[in-house]
Amino acid sequence: MDKYAKTIRSYLLIAAGTGIMAFAIKSTFDASGLVTGGFTGIGIMVRRLTAEYVEGGIPIWITNLVLDVPLFLIAWKLKGSRFIGRTAAASLLLSFWLGIIPDCDLAGGDYLLAAVYGGVMMGAGIGLVLSAQVATGGTDLIATLLHLKFRAYSIAQILQVIDGAVILAGIYVCGIRASLYAVLAVYLTSRVSDLITEGGKFSKAVYIISESYEQIADAVMNSMNRGTTMLPAVGMYRNEERRMLFCVVSKKEVVTLKEHIRAIDKHAFVIVTDAREVLGEGFLEY
Image (cartoon, rainbow, N blue to C red; front, top):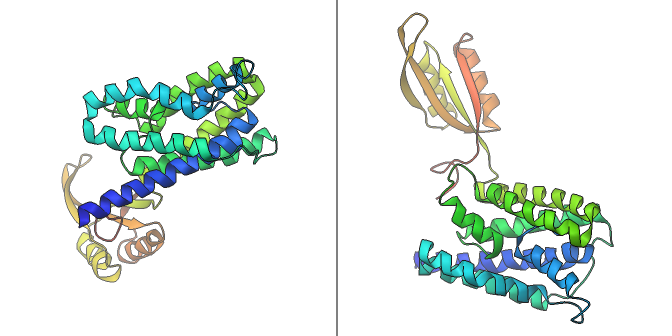
């Protein structure tokens, strides 16, 4: 039952994400001439370049499907048929939404509004789709495939570089001013998609070095109901063996934790760092 529930959840995320992406494209980017990257960005350029020869230009959804075909073949070989199945579904859904959502200008010709609202919506849509562990085809599929090789970079970061190249090409079609605002939209897209895929509930990782480590650990576990781990350490200045505590707390609990430490040992050495995403009991579920 859990398997079917996860599958249904994945496809709901894909449907919602592609719908948001298509709305962002049709109501802000295409309407304002912002080439923000991706195959849809290429589609915007193709539509404008072919407007002289085809009434209204070649629709974006057609360009999106045509360009995705060779990528699907590559992804099939690298990621397998299961990945392609969901990716193909995402691509078809995106093209479907692009085909049925009517043309409208949500920003009213304002480049800044188009970049901000379009970037946020696009980032939210991409984040939802990536949360389902698939891509919608296009440059985000290219980024997903490149991520297999360049693990040090997030999918959103790789996507940002690829989209930058498309934006440069967009200067020729839509002009430098629109392209400059497109850069802002791409940045917002990457930030919002990163926030959704990596988790927005940031926590704090805390390292504590103190002679009273047992009392501090007791306060963390009993007063704050948080777990803590003792790590062996060596102070290199005097070559003395020490004990270091490691624990993860929410941002709101950091103040309480420091108060407990201060009450027990005013001379304790404490390091507080950001933990972007914490999975497990008391935090996010897997």
